[in-house]
Picture (cartoon, rainbow, N blue to C red):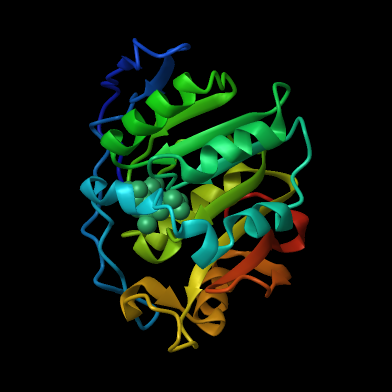
Length: 245
Ligand SMILES: C[S@@+](CC[C@H](N)C(=O)[O-])C[C@H]1O[C@@H](n2cnc3c(N)ncnc32)[C@H](O)[C@@H]1O
């Protein structure tokens, strides 16, 4: 468990993309005094994958991604309504964030969370260029996405969960962040399918995802099986209650 030591907060708001049409602020107000426990190498029998480094960000916006992963179908399957509050958790350079921002519209909000500020700087520049004012980029820590409690209608993690260095702490925080009826949606490359051309450590089986989320107080409420490479699994807080276990 992590331990808050003092109340020294660093509140830095970096103004990014000053040449952009609309500057987007990255909230970096991490409590640097919070102790992060050592990361386990395995979680419930699964080896935890290393975080994708920000220098690999061009791969996330590669031209072939739509064809390979059918990202538009993934977005449609989320059934997001205008005005909702959603989170792109582990957003990287914002491939999905920008689309989510258009889907929720000016009355909605997209929290874009990543542990690598460099990813968020790239995201903020793109959001500014596209004049998207409803995105809130947040630097998270490996144990805390820093989301408001009880407000998020949908938390989306695309190719992210298997990289969480501290899955238990992250799941507890995500659960607390959900609004009543809110959903956590995981897209993970299918570990059962050898034809999916992704390294095994970056894939997960459906059984493994359930084995990790159910003890954390989540229940599988919906599955979407029509993506070419990924599982798309929708979880609700068990008993409809979003309090942390
Ligand atoms: C493979 S990338 C996926 C990016 C994005 N979801 C996409 O599909 O384009 C994984 C991202 O998750 C981020 N990440 C890993 N652990 C995280 C954590 N505990 N909290 C927030 N972001 C995390 C990494 O920094 C990286 O940017």
